[in-house]
Length: 150
Image (tube, rainbow, N blue to C red):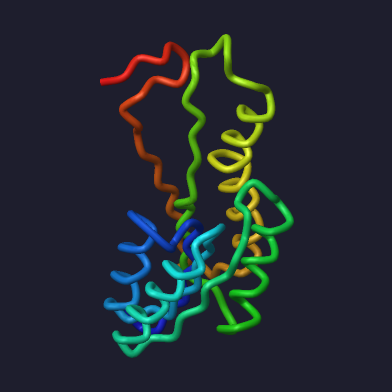
């Protein structure tokens, strides 16, 4: 990979952290967002730097459209470009539908759907013809509607 710049939402743990580190190993400079765990974010930054690549951890609440737009702007300001966006941040609310609050529902939709749209829209202005947008989804072993647990 010829010094690409990647932004990963939700990059301080799990799939996001693994993706950030792998992109760095493949030669990309990597920015990623995290919401709460500054210690985990610092660990991922160190692992990226160990590959010889540059890293930027951006504290951002993925439920906030403005925070996601700002993360794209911060990435471009720091690295001068953006080539890859990985929409990885995710959230879940586990409750039977009759007990799920509207605010919990809004939070899940804002993180899982709206943030990916906002990030993709903001990134599109910076991606060249070789740019990539990757959106990751995962499945939990608990059904949001029925409360069924597998």
